[in-house]
Structures are given as C-alpha cells and as structure tokens.
Length: 235
Image 1 (cartoon, rainbow, N blue to C red):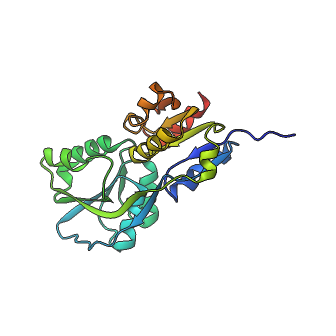
Image 2: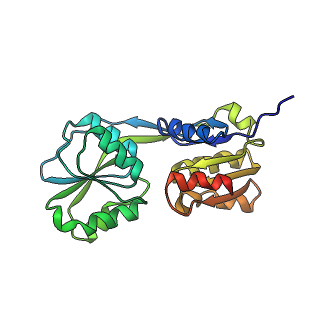
Image 3: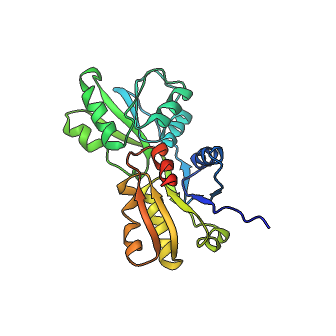
C-alpha cells in the first residue's frame, strides 16, 4: 500500500493560492488549497486628479484597481516583484519594486520623493495589514488610500480540520490569515502542525499557541518573499 506524503496547507486567498500551489507542485510537494481569506472587489469612484504615482502593496490591489480604471500612465511603486509583475502585466510601463514589505516600500517611495511631484495614491484593502500612509506623510509626501477590495475571513472545510494532525505544514502569508488560524486552533488544536509565516508580523498571532501546545512551531521567513517562505519547507 502506498502512503500519501503529508500535504502542505495553503491558506492565502485565491487566485494567489493557486500560484503558490503551482510552485509547490513544481517542487514535487503535495498541497491542500483551502483559503482562510477571500477577496471581495469594491467599486469606489477613482479620482486621479493630482495623483502623480500609484503604490501597490499586493497583487490583489493591482488587479482590483485595473478593473476600476483604464489609466496606466502613472509610475507604480510595488511592494515586491510579484506585485510589480502584476502591474506590468496590467499595462503599467514604469514600475519599481521594493522587494520587501510595506516598510521597504515606504523607504523606496521616500527615496524618490523629489521626482514624484504630486500625490501618491495607494489602492488596496479596506483594512490594510500595514500602514504605508503614515511614513509617507512623515516624509512630507501627499498620500491617500483608496479601498478597492475587501478581505473577508472564511472557515476551513471540515475535511481540512479532519487532516490537521497529518499535515506537514501550513503556510501563512498575512496577519489576518494567521489570526483566523489561531482562532481555529483554539477549538481544534494541532500539536504536530508547523506554521511557516511570511514575516514576524504574520507569525505573531500564532506564537502563543505553541506555548499552550495547540501548535508545534511557528517560523518566520528571513525575508518577506514567497521564495524565502517556501525555502522554510526544507528546514
């Protein structure tokens, strides 16, 4: 009898979850795609008067904005290369990647402040995971948010809950997903499950569960990129 290898639970929202799953399958690793978050597009009016640049903290922000506006002539600052690639694929010609987190994105925009000459618009989530506006304002830049999508929590499937004791690891890309998982594990402990997180801020909601025995371990990627996150699977 062939025993199936333990699967890796991908919790991020679609369509990003399928991209992650594709990378894991290319590594010959079995996956379980069951998002703890879902993206719901919003329909705000888009006013680009005085906007000199756009800043995106996620692929979801790029895709939601691209559905709302046909404007592609503003320079774009992106949090990482995946988001930058999504912006290029959406038709933006001038795209710079911070290759990091929201702090790195703020630093990139601030470093180029003299060449912006107007307002920075940040299309993103209704409840953003990180604060990009405050450091930009502190650097005497004009900046404002535009909520173009909402992230809502969803419950894992009963089949996923039944497999908690046999999964190899769970991947967490956001503090929101980690917080949802923490609440799930309060009721359904998984003392053998490893939680692999994109950053320390993602890991924070789960760390107390290790101390109470509801989770085996929590590890943060050394750099907030998915490549660094997936490298944790080899450790």
